Amino acid sequence: MRRMVLLCCAALVMGCARRDAEPAADTSAMSAPMLSLADLAGTWTVRTMSETSDSVLVEYQMTATADTTGWMIMLPNRPPQAVRVMVSGDSVMTEVGPFESVLRPGVQVTTRGVSRIVNGEMVGTMVARYAGAGADSVVTLRTRGTRNP
Image 1 (cartoon, rainbow, N blue to C red):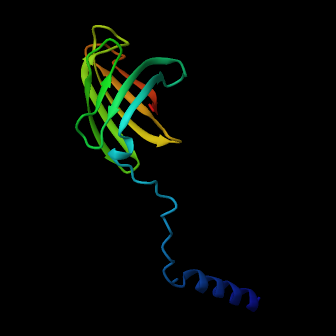
Image 2 (cartoon, rainbow, N blue to C red):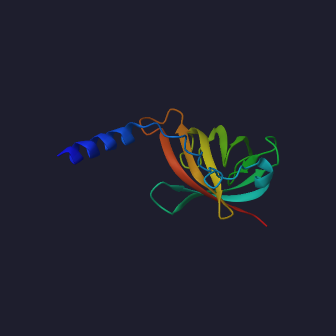
Image 3 (cartoon, rainbow, N blue to C red):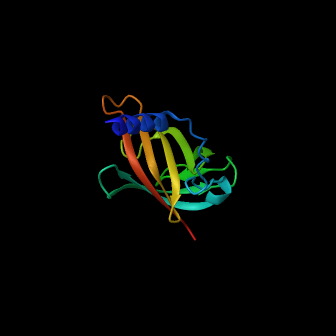
């Protein structure tokens, strides 16, 4: 019985004992590489799809530059639209509009997207906000861009 009490006390003391600080974890392997606008410079063919389907709803060209000026999208049969762009970490954020929607003619839309480079492609999501379109005025879409040669 004494041994049992002694073992329990020893376990309690060991459990409550102060530990030395553990070495910091190496986070370099976990962090994604930083993305720069220069990494994205060029012309991209971008396909937009719904969240649940691989059917392409809209395909357009996007010109990306090494800085925040000069980014443009060229939708079919439309004048070029300026893209507002920002990079943070491994992601590029874009905003376009308002402009007349390709999917809802006569309705103004503003899109905001976030993309990352995955296996050489620009892959991401886009939220389209339609002005005056009623209850379904926000739609989330997927995007996949390939760099043109």
